[in-house]
Image (cartoon, rainbow, N blue to C red):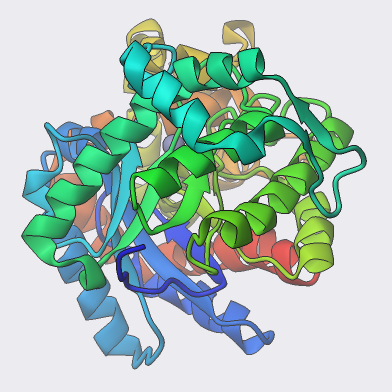
Amino acid sequence: MSQYLPLGKFSFGLGDRFAQQGKAQLRACIRATELGAVFVPVWNKSHREHTFIGSEPSSTRAEADAAVKALGWNQPYHVDADHIRLETVDRFIPHSDFYTIDVADSIGKPAAAADVKAFVERHPELIGTVSIPHLDHPLTITRAEAERVANQFLLATQDAGKIYRHIAQAKGATNFITEVSMDETDNPQTPLELLIILAAIADQQIPIQTIAPKFTGRFNKGVDYAGDVKQFEKEFNEDLAVIAFAIKQYGLPPSLKLSVHSGSDKFSIYVPMRRALKKFGAGVHIKTAGTTWLEELIGLAEAGGDGLAIAKEIYAHAIEHVDEFCAPYASVIDLDKRKLPTAAVVNVWTSRQFTDALRHDSKNPGYNPSLRQLLHVSFKVAAKKGDRYLNELKRHEAIVAKNVTENLFERHMKPLLIG
Ligand SMILES: [Zn+2]
């Protein structure tokens, strides 16, 4: 396996659409680290986000460096080129030291028949009964099943290898962390599939440190997990067992861990995750992005006056374009249009009414998950306002920052670490 830049045990993906909340986000990592485990901040932004906002990858790097310097953070931190492919990676190379190689589009496209055959022949250990510590039952894999899985995923791992080697050549293998993501696809991967995928990734000599499978259930944007929590917990445990086994079996980096592309705010699975991580002594990477943008809106609304006014303006624009804004996110939002208040109704709301509706507190009777999801996918509206939006953020920096830090620390990091 080639050399690599090692990633710490607990890391947290901090998306920041407008690159204004780096310090507030880092403060949450500092508070989490004070609880006993270093929480490595990773500022992630995808090609798609940069395109929507009109920003450049250099701005994410500048933000991360500035936050780290300002707060004297002396632990590792990283900048993630999120969901890149061969066509989109180059603009990130000077600035990112973490690459999320997205090969979901290649899933289900068959690799060359000869490659599938060679893969299955190279891995006799995968055929028959495979006993994996901490799995309730050994895996039983027939040759036909191994071929089916290889047909489903081998091309994706070959693509990952191509992209990995492209980055390694440009950057030097020791200068970055590699994640492979398969989350943006239709079906969750089973533990058996994960094992075969990891064997194929090892064949590609990718020093993978985080893998983002698709988990069971719905990961809607900015709202809680929708699905069978018990089933999730079972699969999450099985995935951890498979990863621990694959590290040994295939010589993958000992730091390899799951990456949960959470879509933000999957509070009800944090406790089951914590239990599982503790049991395995495993680390995890949690990726969030939109939750911070929503805290910006909450902070502006809380500030009242012109802050509340711009938050209302953004909502009015969002509801006017509800179908257009929701369309690209159909598989990751689930909002009830009938529950969206009209712009006229929101226009006379107090700060409190606005923040009650938007803040992710399911115990608050005013909380409106439909409104929250709509605003989650409407950040383009704020991007269009350009400096006017950024100036509001600056004017109300203290109150916005307080919301950003508290949200990440109290609702996300603390439950993951101590409940
Ligand atoms: Zn993802």
